[in-house]
Image 1 (cartoon, rainbow over the protein chains, first blue to last red):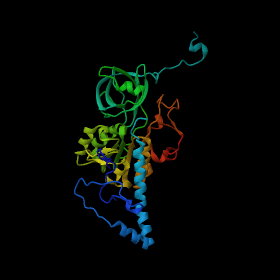
Image 2: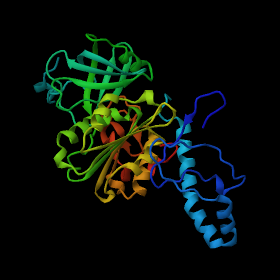
Image 3: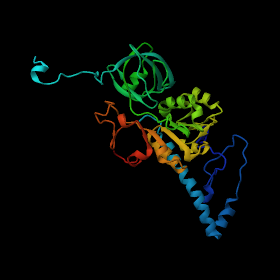
Image 4: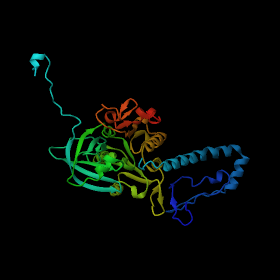
Length: 91
Length: 289
């Protein structure tokens, strides 16, 4: 993530099998952060609008996608909270 | 004065010295680890230092300032010296971090229950440290590395605030060159010049190779970090009784008398600081204990 005129801030490192983003899942469907590959990376990109259309048409598929992605989103939320707590700082 | 024979009372037999009287130790060396953290090597002014178990602590006394509990961060077989890594977080610890070689301090110890490293023989071993929590784990890491054949897979997972806050950095880098252990380091915050892992310590578990059914995890760091890590370890399949934490509380007497370090039914100074997660998980999440 980079603010104008400032150096980018790295807040997460991803490894094999991990999901880069879930912004496609909920409105407004906008990327909030970017990602940079620091080594040879093979990634799969999915047409988000198409996938959302299929989820709307097939609630079983949509529910399955939610069940798979929601834990990831919650895990990242918890990790972000832990980072914000600054537990290694002086108290 | 009436004699014991006259009063019928047995005379007091003084076989132990006052447990609150510190021994005098001299600072042999000071290593600046971080901007607010130093490692002191101290040796007794007279005699030998007592033996200790990895995970135990000493009470260090900065004369005229105060006494504070500090874990031992050096080898259990390190000659006649104690090694302590101290962060300046208050008056007493700050005074200790300002000591110079040749200065004298008071020391009582060693106290508490250490890491059950002998019992972990035959198992995979995970060391999970956050910030200064690497210091109390270091003696146990030395023991496992010195007796590498007795253990299964060994992993060291370390998390800290930023790349400039990495404790024992050269030692972590040295351990990382070994082919028989996994060492992973993460930081909470970094700029683009850091090419290592960014994220919280529990996320490193996904990068560590271990059999959760045969793993003993030794965890030390801020309490919130330990709670998250313990949850992640158990979610990964590690048995709660195999998750071992080192607790930190305000210790005064260090011998289970004063109650300053009371943690539910436990006194951290004598029942800990090393404790099994399954024995404290109920009270670990309470807001006030």
